[in-house]
Length: 233
Image: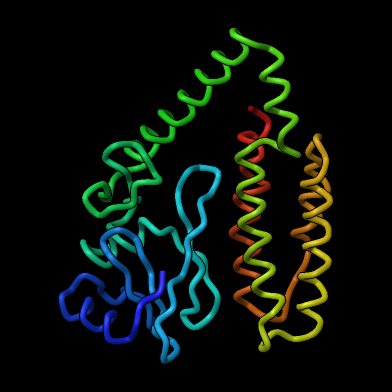
């Protein structure tokens, strides 16, 4: 989406876009989840990436690289900051619908409702395919090197790492480690049987840049500690 500086200013004045409530933020967000960067003279749209859970994440520089849940940012900007224990939830249980009208701060129980609904729908689809055509199920599985949630999550992580490798402010040692991690992740995602020992080994690294260490810690929680969700279709 291309937008001129004049257009973005008009939308900001009309309060269609508000500045995201983050330290050192120069990003604006709409009620529909469109994010624009005003870090440079020309406004630039920042694309979000859908994760295996169905939720969207987005990477911003504030001033270091950090990954955010898109629904969290919308609620923080147009509603309020979350209270202790509150999480972004979806009224219609559809995490791809990030319009502000569909979002609210809820409890972990509220969050589990839509996650359970997504898992149930997935299970019903597996039963339907198995009942109607076992061959179709086998073909569906063969279409992916690994199951969909893992493939989506690992792809998001690799996109983040690729972006990091072209940053000029990273030292050579950090870039070399990142490239080695990318090679390892590519190998892990290219075979049908997931080797979690190899996956754990990817995260046994340490960087000079603190923001990169934080990114690896976050995705270690997603990709390693959440391994059970990757063992199902």
